[in-house]
Length: 260
Image 1: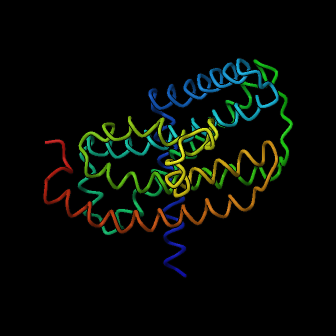
Image 2 (image 1 turned 135 degrees about the horizontal axis):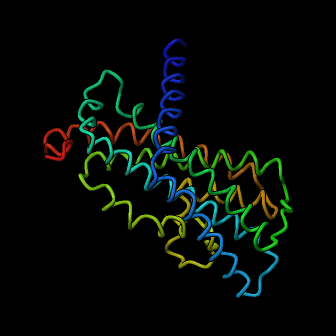
């Protein structure tokens, strides 16, 4: 019990510390503020051009999910890369606290920062384009969004395992942005993608988190996808713990923790 309390306190303090750190970075602030608004504007115009004005709220919510994913993806990679540039990554790796517990607050903090994207895109659509905020299940929407954020954070934890090994984490982060939000159905329905992509979509926690959020927005089953998102997120977290042990040993052997 005391160990669980200690882990909870570690995660809580770590998330608060990294959120504070990122909120003082001009690059992080610019990226977090502007990118979701660009996503929302493009999504609303695309849905209007397609003659589907009844789904403008879905477009705004989908743009918010894209913003959260971008924040987790680049934030996790950027956080690990920052530790490497500051020369503290080696210290974190050899500290008594296990590496997964060190990286978990980083990925959760990026997801928390990314939550702004959902608020910004929905608010931007309502203020600028007159998108009505008529959620099918407003209370379940408030439940589905944090669950989706948590699932994204668990996926970011697994990605962070590879970011430890790579000296340039952005080399992996850049090509993963668009494919994951497309395969997850954040903005584009999964049914419009080729059939061979379906199994890939089903194993992504982002898919079920997105489905829960969209169901809360336009109607449908919310609790089922929410449960699947949590279950897959937990599986990704356990996989990340296993992978991090191997990655840590590989990084030490290859001497890739430091810049020089």
